[in-house]
Amino acid sequence: MKLRHLFIICLLPLALIMSCKRTEDPIFDKNASARMTEAVAHAHSILQANKAGWLMKYFPSGNREFGGYTLFAKFISNAQVTLTSDVDEDILTSTYSVLPESGVVLSLNGFNKIVHIFTEPGMDNGGIGADDTGMKGDFEFIVLEATPEKVLLKGKKSGNEIVLLPLNGNEFDTMPSQYQDANEEFLDFGVFNLKNKAGELVPLTYNMRTFQDASDANSKLLTFRVIPGGLEFYGEAELDGVKFSSMKYVKPNAEYRYGYYTDESGAIKIVPNAAPLNVWFRENLWSTSISNVGATGKPYWNTAKTNLTNNKLTLNNYYIGTYSGIRGMVYVMQGGALAGLITHNLVVIPDTEDQVRISLEGQIYNLGGGFSVAQWTAGLNQLTTPFNNRTFRITGDGSNKPRSILLTDTGIPTNTFRLYLDDIDDPLNK
Picture (tube, helix red, strand yellow):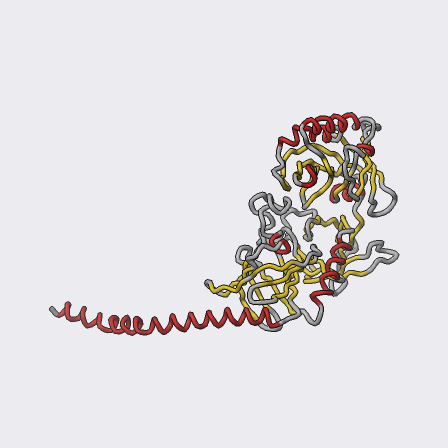
């Protein structure tokens, strides 16, 4: 009996505590709900209060292998936001919301290609990244901090820190073009070397706004945004023992034909060079037509024309090069209602600046209208034949960025193609 009484006595304080907790729970829940409502309202207010808009430092993918970008956002109402970026001149308005979840979440939920190019699967964004994941970017962000001086976000998917800084006056109208110009100037470069503290030039691997030590495939990927006057990195970067978060661009001089980027101390330099002809060819999208095809290739193009006509297909434009990060040949058909890309390997020949090998890879991307293998077998395959498994020497016009180049087969001199950066319409008739 004594043990039982003791057990009951011991339970009494616990019962009293639980009883008190049950009494307090509704009050706690109400306070938590009220705090969340206030936090949502606060974030909403901060975003809209700055009528000039915000500069967003945006980094897709948790590994940041696709580089960093600058977006510009103006929250024009409780539900609409206008966006533009450093890589897209369009200015587009869509919907957004600020939501209460486990925390306050900013969701750019209305489709807007300015941001959704980073979030769509590769099959929908033009082929950047994997078919199913694309660039692995975010359109939903946890709001960590919201003040008039800074809004700090965290990508729900990537976990990346995304910073919004306030714009002033009419900067939303004027600043994007400055960043777009900086991006265009940066695209002039295709090769980068590190000039280390000892004054030696060491190759860097460059891809989509990232640098990496070319001698060590396991070295840290250094991801950056291109900004007017230089580069700004995601967090602290390090090369040759020198730590930095940004680099300023020093204009060309007698020693550095294309200028260079340097850290604040000037201890190291990232030295750019113009893209060699074979890289310039590979990274751009070129147009041609039957009148620009040499004697070896012309019969194949004539056969393609006959076969397509018999299959009631019209080829409006033909391109070779890189489209939205994918290398291959692009076909625009049926007045633009049908378009697709078929991948090709465009391999720069090592230790050359003017040679490239072209071969069919064969992956098909539907760019509109249901493009498929049916169009390929209906005649487009003939266009590829004189390119396939051939090595070409590239001749430019002497400039760093030629708008027209000539491909000449190193084994068959009459197998030539004159290519243009400008569009050529109706390529099987011109």
